Image (cartoon, rainbow, N blue to C red):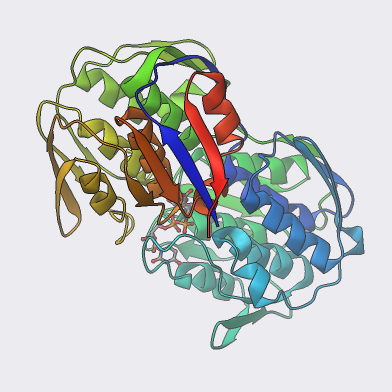
Length: 418
Ligand code: EPU
């Protein structure tokens, strides 16, 4: 088992280059199946989640070539076979193989996906979308088979603006007959990135980034070259580190608009930032004003930054609050933060934070990816040494986190433990 060891209290300065977005790359890689020839995706982060997807592609018979941050996928040799449980359970995003294989071959057989245990995370809306396109869904336990004689476009209303369901329905609909409309679609930048990729391949998708997406089915999709957008959640995580430990810490290669909700909260708290065309520079202020956040779909405050932001609020003078509205189980980092000295109480979907409280290093556990990122932030701020166990969760989503933080002055290393 891997753990991350951090000695806190160091000032972070210099520049951190943000990688390609995990939640975009994990959809683009399965989407490549829809092309009839070679696809090149660049700026793919080297994290265990993208490794797991390339393992599924290879299992299916695609040729995958990875050179640094580019991934070349030739799907022409794919054989559509059942994806085994041990690989589909490695991550959440394996569910994108459902939409992509159904769209291309009109049949998919695979197990329920894995991923962080941050809530129930059903896939009923994905399946409702596939059924609306004419597919039949059957399941034996966790093994799902979705198949259709042909897929025909329809109007689909999503009861929740789900990121996964929006992307999966786009993947299933691009080669369907006729027009598909997704109402109450999610609007996250990753959805726009995936729609642009499919359009580059020859699809006809309009409205991505709004709550109504219209897809006109086409006969064939061709190979193309595409770039993953910068990871707004990775960027936000490092910006929060800058707000707590930074002296002119530059978070580079970002799209500042994607970080608007976070940067406006920084402003409310009295944290100064300098925003350039593709970077933000953050420094630690003398004191922090308290504030409240409520997680919302994009462009609201992202649930994927909620846990990291909570660490920042432990340093505000007075009472702050965090309300989580997207996932039911995203407070697993709180007992660990309290062990480090924070004063946080949780009631239902709300956390109340009283600060400022100094934090002290101790042994804590990364229960999920963003909980792990929150604990890295807490450890950088804390006095003394922190050992974060289950670090595999963190490595699923943060490319070269140890190298990036070491380069700006942190004392951090990965250690193997029993
Ligand atoms: N939901 C349903 N039914 C569905 C689909 C979703 O009830 O069929 C519910 C979920 O249980 C949740 C809400 O709808 O309560 C929103 O879920 P959504 O489908 O939007 O999330 P997701 O596709 O499972 C992706 C990201 C998450 C990110 C969320 C929200 C990927 C692989 N995962 O998850 O990323 O938190 O969107 O933005 O793209 C992370 O990176 O740490 C992470 C968890």
